[in-house]
Amino acid sequence: MLRAGVIAFLVFYCSSFFSQPAYSRDFETRKKNVPLAILNNHNNYFFLLRNNKAAHDITIERRAKPSAEIISFTPLKLDSINADWFNYDNLDYLFFEHNYHVYFLFEKILNSKKTLYLKIVDTLGKASGFIELAALEKEKGVTEIKFEYKRTYNNNILIIASQTYGNFLIKKTALLFDVEQRKIVFTKKLPFENNATGYSTAFEVNTANDLFFVLIKAHVVSYTRKYVDHAQISVPVFFYDTLNIVAFLNSTTFPSKKPLAVNSLTGLKNIRIIAKENVSVVAQLSMKQKGGENTMYFLQQKISNDLSNDIYAVLTPLDSSIKESLTFYDGTDYKEAADKEYTFFKSFTETKTELQLVERVEDYYYKELIFLQSDFNTGKVLQQKIIPRKIYSFKGRTRFKNIGSVMPFVYKNKLHVVVLESPVNFKKQAGDFNFHRFKKETNLWRSNLVMYAIDNGNIEKKLLYHNNNFDVVPMFYEAQNCSDLLLYLNNSKAEKFLILKPDQL
Image (cartoon, rainbow, N blue to C red; front, top):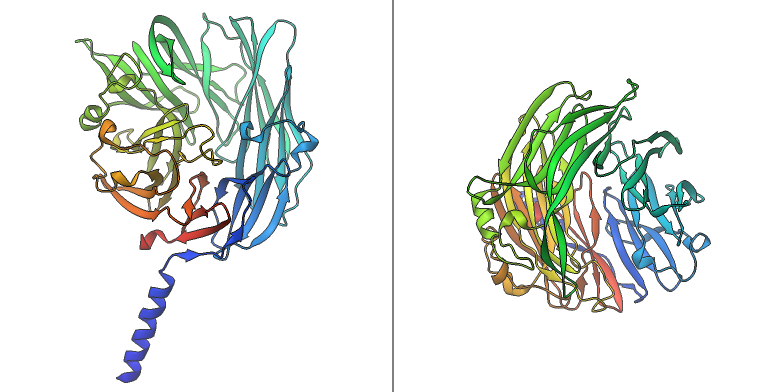
C-alpha cells in the first residue's frame, strides 16, 4: 500500500514538474543584435533570424530545445552583395524551412536595377553561395520595376517581375524556382496589361506547376480622405467592372479565363487563390445594397483546374455583431465596417476547413484582425470572430520594429493567436470588442502577452506573460505541426527563451 502511494506521488510530481514552463538560461545580448523571426517546426530545435547591426549582416541561429543553446551559427554575409550603407531594417525577404533546409530569399535594390538572391542553409549550418533567381533593369521608357514573390504549396518560389512603361502599360513575367532542383522550371510571359485589359493579382501555382491569377478591371469613381502619417491625403475609390480568374495550364497552348461569381463591387479588400485538387478563389469585398448601404462579404468560389466546371460559389455577409463592432469613424470620411481596409495575413489548411486571418494595419498602427473558418467541401463560412489588437509603435521608440506582430499557430485543429496588449484590457471579454474603449499599447515594458484561442464558435482569452524584468518580444513566427509555443524574452542586458505546452495553457 505504501509502495503504491509512493509511486503515485512520484508520477504526480514528475507530471507536474514537466508541465511547468521551460525557461532557458540567460544569454548575453547586445542592442545591435535584433531578432526578426522564429521558425519552430521541430521538437528538438528551432531557428532564430537576426539583424546583426554591429556586423552589418543577417544571421541564422539553430538552437536546441529546451536549453536554447546554439547548435549552429550561420552569417549570410550579405555585404558581399549589398553596399555597406544598406539598411537591413528595410530589407524585403522570405524566410522559411523545407525538408530540413532553411531558405532566405532577399531583394537587392539599386537606383535602376533590382535583383533577387537566394541563400540555402543545410543541416550543418553551412550556407550556399548567392543564387541569383531574377534581375530587372530599367529599360528606356520604363518608369518602375518591381518583384513580387511567395512560397507555393510545395515550397517552391513563385516570382512575378513587373516593368511599368509610363503610367499606362505593364509587362509581367512569371518564374517558378524549384528549391530542390535549384533551377527555374518555367518562365511565362504574360499579356501586356493596361486600363483596357485589366491588371493581374493573386498569383498562385499548383503542384502540377499550372499558373493561376485574377485579372481585375476597375475605374475610379471618386476620391476620399484618409489620414496617413499625421496628414490628410486623397485616395481613389474604385468601381470594379470585372473579375476573372485566368489559368495558364501546361496541358494547353492558350490561357483559359472565367468570370468570378460577383459583380457591381465597390470595394475589394483582398483576394487570393488556393490551387490544390481544384482552384478556389477567396476574397473579401464590399457591395452597395438597394438602400445605399455598403456591406462587406466573403466570397468562396471553387472551380475545376481547367476552369470548365463550377463546383460552388458562396457569398457570405459579415456577421452582424462584428459589423456593429466595426462601425465607427477611424481616419476616413466613412464609418461603415465595409469601408475599412483589411489585408490578408495568414491561413492554415486543415483536413476539411481553412483558417484565415485578415488584419488592419496603417503605418505603425496595428489594429484588429478578423478570423474566418471555411468549409472546403461547401464553401460555407463556419465562424467569424474579431481578434482584438491595438498597438501603436512610434518610430524610434524601440529597437524592436515588430512589436505589433501577431504570432499564430494551430494546435489540435484550434487556432491560437498570441498578441501584445495593454494590461488595462485584461478584464475585457474576448468576444466583446469596442475599438475606442480598447486601450492601445505603445511599448513592451509592463505590457501583457495574451493568447486568443478559437474553437467551435467560442473565443477564449488567456494571459501568457506580463512583461516586467524581461519583456516578451513578438515577431514573425512560423510553426507547423507544433507541440509547443516558443517565446523570445529580452531585458536589454540578457535574453532567454520560454517554451510553453499548449495542452497546459
